[in-house]
Length: 359
Image 1 (tube, rainbow, N blue to C red):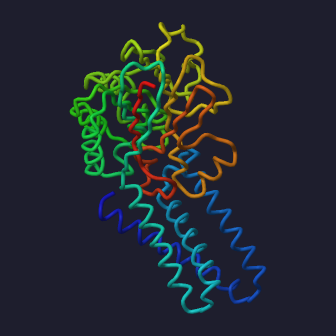
Image 2 (cartoon, rainbow, N blue to C red):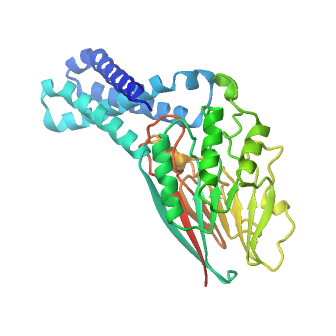
Image 3 (cartoon, rainbow, N blue to C red):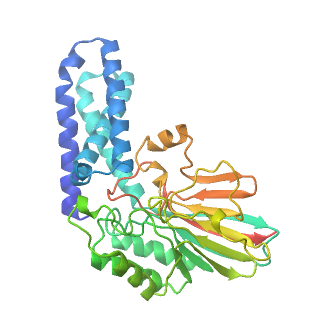
C-alpha cells in the first residue's frame, strides 16, 4: 500500500466511524440500557457479516468496493470496542475520542500484523523415514496486493536462512489483482533462492474471477510457462519422489472439481514411503487419507478478519494449524499474507518450517 492510499484509507475509516457515531446519537440520548444493548448486538452481527463476506465471498460489487467495506468493518469494530470501554468509564464526552482511538488501534494492529511474517516450526517423526528432511511450506502470498515487495523479499531471505531441502508453494501465490510484471517478478525472486521448489495451484492463481475487475493480466499458459521457466516444478495431479523414502503428491484445487483428483485415485507408492499430500483447500478429514502421512494446505488465512476464524471453527471447518486423524496429520497454514486488503486481525502471517525426522 502506498503512503497516499494509506492516508486515504485511514481518513475514510475515521470518517465512517464519525458517521456511525452521529447516527447513533438519538439512541444514546434515550438512556435505555436495553435499547443500547440490542443496538450493540446488531452492530456486532453486521460487523461479523462484513468480515465473512470480505474474506469468503466473491462478487463484482465486493471486489470493487472492498476498501470502503473494510473501512466500515474497522469502524464498526472500533465502535463496538469503545462502547465496552465506555461502560466502565461512564463519561459522555469521552465516547467520540474512544471510538476514534479504538478504530485507529484496530486499523494499526491489523496492518502491522499483515506486514509481520513469522516462521512456525513443526516436527514429525516416522519409522518410514531414513534421513531427516526440512520443508518450508509457503502459501497464500497473493503477491502485489496485501504486502509490500520489501516485506516479501525480507521473508524470502529468512526462508533461505532456514536452509530447507525443499520449498513448497501451496497455491495463491498470485491472484486476480497481480499484474503481469508482478507475476514474473515473484517467481523469479523465489527461483533465485536456489532451493528445489514445487508448486500447486490455488483457487486464485490463474485469475479465474478476473472478469470482476479489469480482466486477466496473464493467461493460464503464461503463468505455467513462467513458473516452469524459473525452474519450479508444477505438481498437477501427480507425484514426485524426493527420495526412496519420501514421496509427494500435488493436487489440483477442489475449486475446479472436474480436474481435482484425490490421493485415493493413485496407485500405491512403492516401498511404503512417507507421503506428503499437497492440496490448497484443506480437506475436511473424517478418516485418514489413504497412502498419506502428512497433508499440507492453506487457503483459509485462518479467517483473516475477526471473527471469521471463530465462525469456521464453530462450523467444524479445519481452518488453521494441526488436525491429526489416526496416522494422517493435516497441517493448515494461516498463510504468509492474505486476500488483497492490507488488514489482518485473525492469527498471524507465517510460513511453515517442517522437519521430518526418522523415528
